[in-house]
Length: 160
Image (cartoon, rainbow, N blue to C red):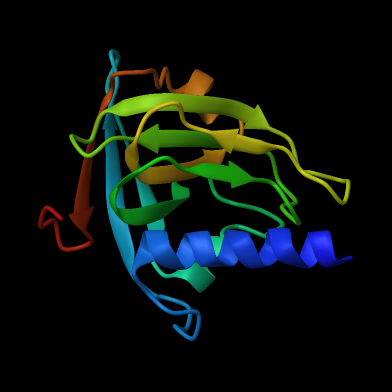
């Protein structure tokens, strides 16, 4: 029991350090457009932004669906080694790791929900600034690959 609490507490502290925010920050309504330039064409997603520790910890947990043009963008605020897990996540996801130059450096495709108490971590081998979660399988459907360039803009079209 103590070990589980320690692991959860350590994870929360890690997220607080990555985000530069405290846990009392409420859910963000901020959304951005994430455009991925693939070899074939460009794909756009309307992404909810998770940039506080609480938002990053919650992620897409308990969501029963996600439209194909929707995503969640985790903003780590500075390049860091990072990982995601599928605890309490109900839908398969593609996890896309993006460096500070807005290039895709790692992708975990069609990651299935975790149905056990202990869930696998999906970690980037590179320092990343952003993590993007989209519906599982879309990376292959849209030909999203390593090295593809990302553009992030406000809903009004201003670059972030």
